[in-house]
Length: 143
Image 1 (cartoon, helix red, strand yellow):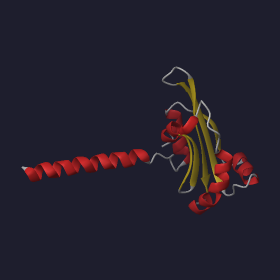
Image 2 (tube, helix red, strand yellow):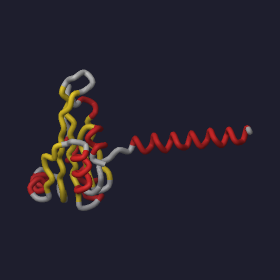
Image 3 (tube, helix red, strand yellow):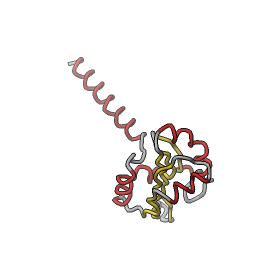
Image 4 (tube, helix red, strand yellow):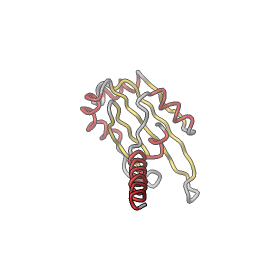
């Protein structure tokens, strides 16, 4: 009986660990079309789904090898009833090496100062061949 209890406790611990790790790794979908679809399903307005103009503009600003840019936003009421902005910008690169090389410059361009509407919920990160910036809710919605 003691061994069964120990095995059960370890199984619960492992299940909890997997759940926590999976929830911490929120990042947008690596496929732009799938990210756009997921954002639309979560009621985000797609402001840009561009493969030409914005990638060219980012290149002029020193962020090379951008192949696709997705920008989405949503305004909703927070717990206090105030309007809150959720948004995400996803830069897709030709490969992971290009994304890694562009991370510093892209972070400078995408990073915003904390404000009352966004605050500390805003993140800029690189994952594989993409760099994404936005609120945690919007990033999660783009999965």
